[in-house]
Length: 75
Image (tube, rainbow, N blue to C red; front, side):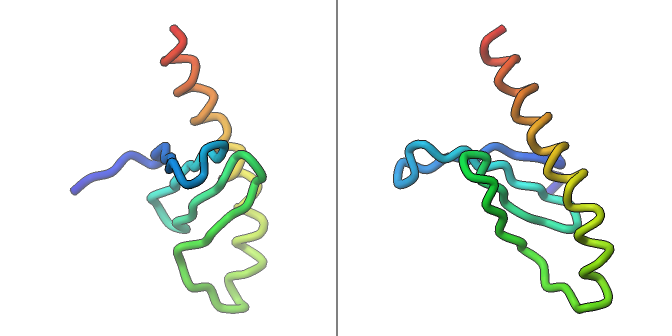
């Protein structure tokens, strides 16, 4: 099955949370309410520096995806 790069998620147990799921490597879920991130990958120490450098760009892309989706709902 082919998934989009980002997916939106919500859950009634977390009524104010907005989750964006990144489905490509490195996979993660970010809660846009508080910027908490849950990584769905295992990383070794050698990958940690590269991941931190890329993470900011990925989080920005997740926020842009959310903004775009909300504009489409409102439009």
